[in-house]
Image 1 (spheres, rainbow, N blue to C red):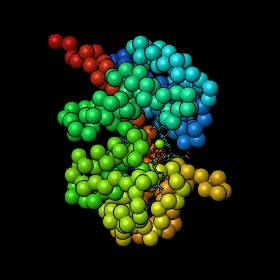
Image 2 (cartoon, helix red, strand yellow):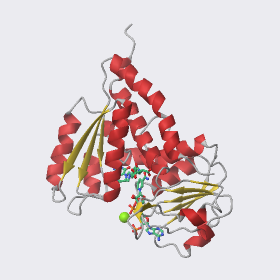
Image 3 (cartoon, rainbow, N blue to C red):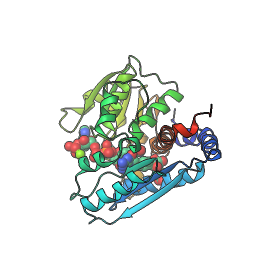
Length: 289
Ligand SMILES: NC(=O)C1=CN([C@@H]2O[C@H](COP(=O)(O)OP(=O)(O)OC[C@H]3O[C@@H](n4cnc5c(N)ncnc54)[C@H](OP(=O)(O)O)[C@@H]3O)[C@@H](O)[C@H]2O)C=CC1
Ligand SMILES: Nc1nc(=O)c2c([nH]1)NC[C@@H]1CN(c3ccc(C(=O)N[C@@H](CCC(=O)O)C(=O)O)cc3)C=[N+]21
Ligand SMILES: [Mg+2]
């Protein structure tokens, strides 16, 4: 089975559209600001596609593009401007950032109520504590959970193996799966004999940025394979971290690239923009007594 992330993402648009419409009716305009410094290729795809989706849903999206040599102080000033802007509900700074900028300092500069990526340590901490209540969570892992739920792939008591340990994908993905009752194995660059781990996965998540790292022979027959990678092959074609052609015959369910995880990341971003908008405007939304 091919998991159709793009189709699911489009399917989820109608309820979000209705929600945006209802907010507009009471004078609330959900607004997201995306800041992109430099020219990371995966970020370029993301910025283009999420702007399109925002327009489709009626969410106001502002894109701030800055050159590769933009300084940390300039970026902090730009974030501060939007932290103070009450018409803005979400701020997303594209990662990775150029080397002169300290990512940790930038993430911490985003106002907590506008942390639409869920990257601030307070939100990451809540995720790892499996805290109750609403808090934003990294969009890619969140979108993957939505996709698994929709396809009735329940992680409970399953062995989930995560390949890649980034703060954006691998680590929060493991936490979400653990919170959902999976047995989670994290693997990373220092892991010895990676295939010996991937072959034991009921649910395999691959997020490394290494084109075609995982082949069909590295997968347990029937497993669910989630490919996060946005890589280029030798011909410049967009491919994933999984060799789709050999993997699709072994996996029980698999996400394609493109058309799998990417669109669901964008859906999560739009959902979280709406959640943060509602939290920020709660008083306006309460019925007058
Ligand atoms: N579709 C989507 O929505 C999204 C796609 N992406 C794409 O997913 C990929 C991963 O992104 P991201 O997690 O942000 O990337 P990062 O580069 O931040 O993290 C990748 C991680 O994988 C590790 N790694 C690299 N090679 C191996 C290996 N051979 N075995 C095990 N671990 C390895 C890296 O280790 P080390 O740090 O030592 O290099 C690193 O920790 C990229 O292609 C990116 O473009 C990312 C986010 C969203
Ligand atoms: N702060 C931050 N948060 C992120 O979540 C983040 C980031 N920085 N930096 C870059 C990565 C990458 N990323 C993608 C999301 C969607 C697609 C996407 O739309 N993919 C389509 C591509 C289709 C096409 O080719 O247009 C698909 O897979 O079908 C791609 C990449 C989010 N990331
Ligand atoms: Mg790294």
